[in-house]
Image (cartoon, rainbow over all chains, first blue to last red; front, side, top):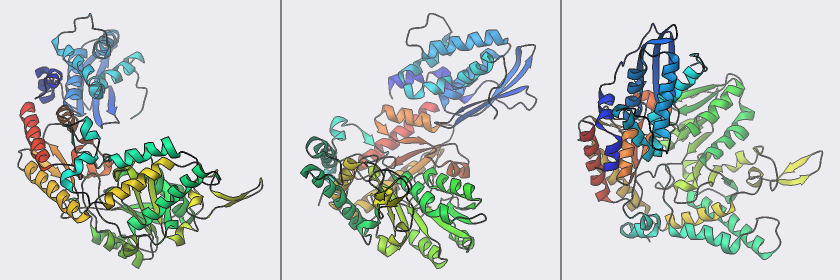
Length: 149
Length: 402
């Protein structure tokens, strides 16, 4: 089996894909953010409970490939408990490490760096960043949903 | 006659990619050298705009362009070359019929029938035309094997129905629909019918006069020809009465500031400079197909399809989506807990070209309650060994994901 691909599908991604963190719907959520990739049909919903600008609870549910699912799982795991500013900075850090051609100086830890291998597979980069891109849009807008549905 | 065993040598792409296992033929076929040469020869040695040019190059380009019309008519056994309209592809052909044929005759409360397995190209044009007129789009259902419910179809037919549009072969399921029977049923109720032949024209001989179909559409690029060229066949009695879809040069008889008289069909539907090199390439692609023994091709493809389906069905946790009794050379499948895009990425790394996604048939995915499938589709240059290689790689992927 192709070694470069094995690099992309690291154990971490496979584990998150199989047993994602906080994978459940939340009917009580303050906000439901939709992350949808119209090209491949991946579709996740992120359920927030927000209090005083802090993400008190965050879960997700939906359908997507191993990479997009694992990446959303990692997002949820890392943003839970953060305030909007910290969450936004964290997302930007992840996105720049994942998409930038320059080697990132930041040490994001093994779990997040697993996704930077997607750089080698331009067709799959959006899978790694789908939920993060949506989240940045949400947080940059002060936590308001910009698009209905 | 071209023998299948030597066929790969006609396709230069396999010299540049010797390890390529190309199983994405339902999306587009590879191009034989004769087609590629014809296009580059045209631009190198014969290029001129068609019609109205008096100099020899223009006359010769016009003649070649018009000669392909006759070739297409013969290939499909149409009654006359005047029934053949050049378009940019199946999508444009269907839009033309929806706009120029159906739209003027559709009234509020009327109905248009399509099937649940239509490609979006044979769905959205009708949906929009219905919306604009206040008419209803009705959908022939199918069973779990991916076979259309003909009884339901019969029950839908009434004087309210102004058009039936149906795919010959489903691009996502591989089902071959009983179009002869469906055309008869539509005609018994005096309803015109369009058949989308995008997936059938490469492998299944079409006899338009025997079928008596009113409109038939296909794309050149799925028939070993270039992209950007397609055909709309329409019965003369309909084409001659249809208004143009686009206006401009090359489609008129006479123009003043007050009024324009349009050219007769088919020229009235070919406004502007068309894809001349594409038409010439399509002609050579048809020559190439005419060199094949189509009975041999059909039984070869049938064997490839059933071998792959049988072997995949033996893999645990894998299901084949679309198991109709009459199937073309398309195998769609899904694997428990493994997304089609992950499968496609792994297969791509092994030089296996397949397609993953909804294949522009979202209602089919909704019907089977899956978001996407992985689809392998065969053509004449595939090899029996490729089936085994493919199945072996699928098993490896399954093991990797655990």
